[in-house]
Length: 278
Ligand code: AMP
Ligand code: ZN
Ligand code: FE
Ligand code: FE
Image 1 (spheres, protein in one colour):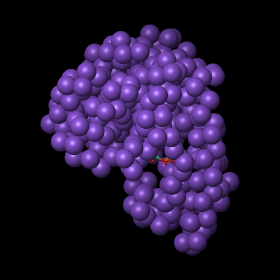
Image 2 (image 1 turned 45 degrees about the horizontal axis):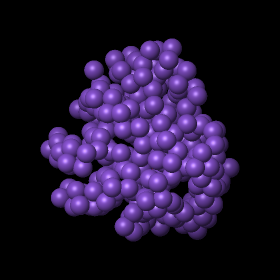
Image 3 (image 1 turned 90 degrees about the horizontal axis):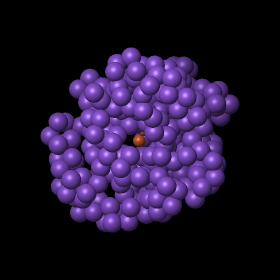
Image 4 (image 1 turned 135 degrees about the horizontal axis):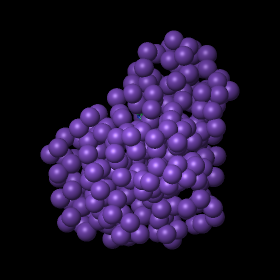
């Protein structure tokens, strides 16, 4: 019995519909899932209906990029209901900031001699919130790069020539707004923050004291030792050890729903404890 609490659909930078995600999850025997599209709640109603029909448990959420100690941190926000609310009301401004950032990326790419237009990128994204993986998709289609990984390594990643930052909430603000909205904020894949495992405990205890509800400990890119270490830290802080695949369909071809690279298994208890942390 396992769950997957980190999934992206066509409503942001995934390539599967909510219904396809639910069908796959049910097909491999997952008992619960969470949809966590970037900066949007638009996929939640469809995913919720599909999950009900498939008799698997469902949590609606989103994934935000926030600023913490001069670094970018990803924050998963669970139980954030579509509609008005303290954090919900900020999402549109975050998407607008993304739109401005996307125009800057296009200009940078054009300056580097890549003929890419914003129209091509939005077409690639369909009705989803545009993210850098969509730029990568266009770059692959036009033969500029062979893979999403190459697009990030050569152009799109932080520090690369077509990187453009966007306005973000601070971690503290986002955690506060999430709790005011009745949601549970959880740090996603803490390895991307650039801290070493030993530095996590001290840094995260302060966030736990202002409402952080958990840390994504069961993450596909982590070694079993690192997962165990993060589970231990969550226990010490009294917060939930969550986990998920960060499935993005074709944009992250090495990651599958439920199992990540193959060895991921997020225990049902993560879902139950998240419900209890609400
Ligand atoms: P954005 O939200 O537009 O800044 O884009 C972030 C998305 O790009 C997230 O889904 C990340 O997982 C993905 N991403 C970030 N770095 C890389 C990378 N090096 N290779 C592939 N995908 C990445
Ligand atoms: Zn993404
Ligand atoms: Fe992320
Ligand atoms: Fe993600």
